[in-house]
Length: 121
Ligand code: HEC
Image (cartoon, rainbow, N blue to C red):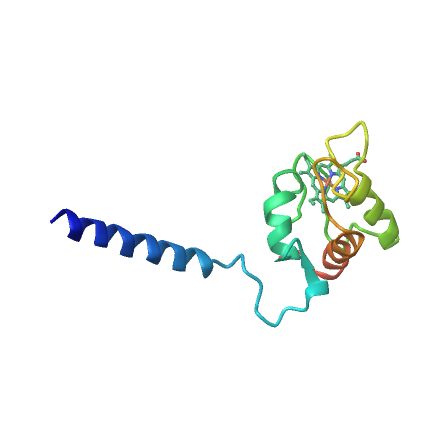
């Protein structure tokens, strides 16, 4: 009996692992590596790290909106904001130099590409 229960638990655990692996967090297998941010698609990374302040649809919340319509500066301007943060504001730095960051320059570029290219839903 105890053995059966153990088996059932192991099976449930394996199933949960399988489900976890198939979550919509994982990028499509053919996603080019230069399109990923910390191994995730840009929108997944955004949802996890940026949406609390900038809003789930990038519509703005405690932080300004990040939709193509309002992002009228050159990409480098936004890359700097993301990599270095905005000292004195709530905007943290996400670049490789930042304590709480770790995004490579390429990952920062990708995030900005995504922000500038993807219309708000
Ligand atoms: C803790 C809140 C917070 C989080 C999390 C956050 N931001 Fe910000 N962000 C801000 C605030 C506040 C500003 C406005 C700063 C200012 O007044 O210059 C800002 C500004 C920006 C700007 C500059 C916008 C402009 O028009 O000048 C960009 C780009 C940006 N954030 C991108 C991101 C990205 C990408 C992420 C996730 C990796 C992120 N932010 C996460 C609070 C946040």
